[in-house]
Length: 148
Image 1 (cartoon, rainbow, N blue to C red):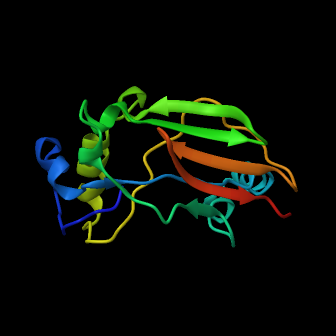
Image 2: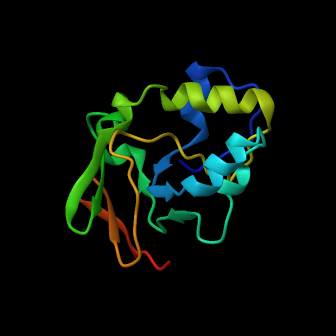
């Protein structure tokens, strides 16, 4: 979600006021780098922050689009045409409102900030040439080919 107003120490019951659109993205992890850093007891942010480490759709869908509630929007990831991840915001371990509240306890959220919310089951490796496609219900959000 993209933050639409500045906020600090946001209570969960007011978090819905801080975003009005949804998008879809992937943040990649270099597992080999992560494992090596963890084994040395080092922080492993280098495994998450490298060129091309995140894909974010340019499309944003208003949360009001879902008449039954945006939490029921299904996000799906296909790898080479096969569904490998599918879930709804409602099925995530931590509700988006709780995440906004939690993050805002440690940093001021500013208009335009983007929060990635979590990962459904189905995480797996990608290889050179794989094609990843992300969908938010029927909306095609991104298509990216892995070059490695």
